[in-house]
Length: 313
Ligand code: RIB
Ligand code: CA
Image (cartoon, rainbow, N blue to C red; front, side, top):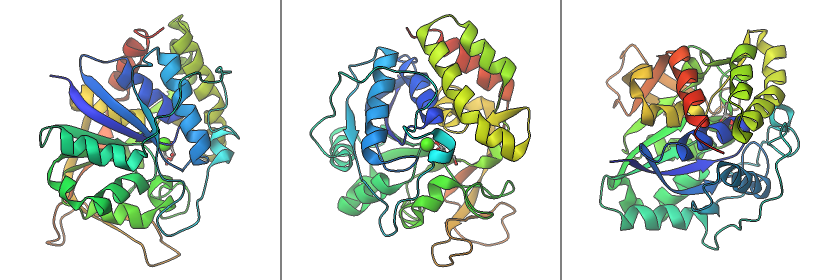
């Protein structure tokens, strides 16, 4: 049976690849809906980008919703410096014909989890956790019904990417992350520790382009744009590809390795705001609330991506 999921996202080129991977894999993943959140760029732009990606995939059957326009307590921090002014710079994707759904994205999350049989819906979070936190605050009863939350966010051994201590998704809304990580919902966490092993080398980007379809060309253009900031910063053979680790995990969990740990979120200190304090060596008796993924097989990851993107138009 395919995994029933809701994707919460701030596309973002890497979000787009994660969404395309899910939409290309109906035998493994049943995407019930996509909810945009403010993050990489504004909510409105992220929502528009989500519509563009759905249309690129041909899966216009999948509904797209707009969620929250800013973090719970703090002003929004965006990342145009990485993703470009549109948040999806690189390919020239047409203006979307598909419209957003009327319902608020947080209400869609709540209503879907309450409607579906308990323990059958996975939430895949690719951006700041504002929508998930709001859903948990609005309807605390959903915590016992969500199967799991698989999220891209945080870092421990790899330290931060937006500050020395914090990864962007957690940094933008640390209060939301704290609500999610203390909710009791099973969490699988894809931190920078594993995403920094998934490098989009030029050979891998050329392989995407070589698929020969519209999707492969668009993905190559996306990554060819978003890589420049990270290549200059890290001077690696390729830029890390973050969000597709989430949807790849649902298809081939064996690509990844990790351990159950306690993860707490720093919300008080301005110096370390958004840090995911991970008890990796179990030196405390704090509850082991997250499966912390520390490593992965990058060849298997890119082989899966290439094979699945080839299934799209
Ligand atoms: O730190 C990486 C994360 O921040 C990714 O989800 C990327 O899309 C940005 O949102
Ligand atoms: Ca993202």
